[in-house]
Length: 168
Image (tube, one colour):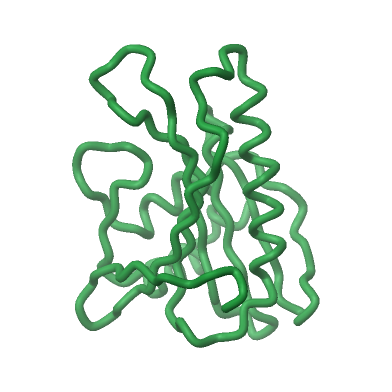
């Protein structure tokens, strides 16, 4: 399991910097690297080799396998993208609130070529199908809200990028 490797954990911490998020629906913001560790800590899928020689590693969250994580690692062993696929209630206070399915992708270089993006979108579509196959499917939204975030190492903030599919 990749996420259990201390070297990978150090690399993820370095990649995420001090960015904080609450994409998994928690009330308080958590370090991005910690949220990524959570969504990657369950059963892993077999790694996929991408057209540029990079590797796509995916796994699901332990004991809640409908939330998932992904990491793209270059042939040199550097993290070049990370992603979380999660479902969040639209209104956490409401008992049967519909869920929003989100794919959040984290990059450090907004101008990089992204040969991994189609594979990541395919992975997210399979994850959405899992959500929709749950017993009460009317609770889950039909669409995936995809957001791409630029990790700013100098400010420890995430900047949402507005990229159309043609731009990757």
